[in-house]
Length: 325
Image (cartoon, rainbow, N blue to C red; front, side, top):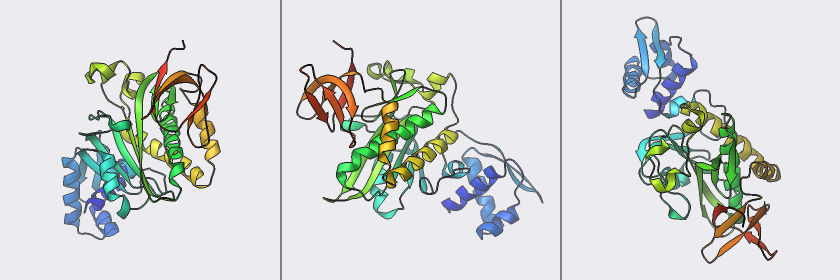
C-alpha cells in the first residue's frame, strides 16, 4: 500500500501541476477509485497540497520540505541507487536499519530519515542528526574483497563533495571521510561492511549532511568547526533536489568503480583533498603519529612523512589538521 502512495505522488509531481484523473490513476495501478482517494488523503496528511476537482482530477499545488520516496523518485534518473527507498520520520540510525535489511533487499536500496536519535560517526562518536539535515544509508553488494572497502569510502566522499560543489560551494574532502567547506565540517561518511574472509557480503554507506540545519544549536565544542549548506549559502536548499543529485553522482561513480576504474575516482579525490599537503596528527588504536600528509595510495591509505623523513602508511585512524610547526 505504501508503494502505491509513493507512485501516486511521483505521478502527480511528474505531471507538473496538470490534473491527473482518479480514473486514470486507478486504471494504471489496478486499484479502486476509493483506494486512490485514501492515498490522496494520506498525502495531504503528510503536508502535500493536492487540489481535487470532479471530472478533472487531482493536481499537486504544494509540497512540504520532506524526503519521501515518491518525492525523491520523481525525476531521479538512476538505475540502481534509490530504486528502493525506505523512509522514516525519525529513527535511531539509518545505518542500523540498513544493516538489518541488507541481506533481504536489492543493491542500491536507500534508507533515509528526517532525523536520527542515535546517529554515529567513526570510532563510535555521536553524530547530531536534527531535522533539516540529510541522513541516509546506501546498501551496496560490490562483490569485492574486504581489503578494498576503504575505496568505497573515498568514492562516497567524491560523490558527496561533487553534489555540494554543484551548489557553488568549495567542498573539500578531509581524509578519510569528512567533507569540509572553508575548513568546517558539513558532511560525514560512515562505511560498514559484513564480510567473509575473501568477499564482502554487503556494504552500508552512511552519509550525513548538515543541509538546512542551524549550527548555532550545536554544542559549543563542535559549533566552531561545523557548518551547514544553509549557513554557507545564506538560504535553505531544496533537499529533494539535492538528494537526487547526490544519488546520481553516487551511482555514476559506483558504475565506474564496478568497471575497475577506481584510479580515475582516486584522482578526483586527490584534486578535492583538504588533507594532502597539510601537517596532521593521526591517532590510531595503538599510536599517535605527526607528519605531513603527502598522498593517498591506491587502497585509500594516507601516506605521511614524519619530521625524521620516515614514510608512514595509515590505513585507518582519526585525522586532525594542525598548523605546521
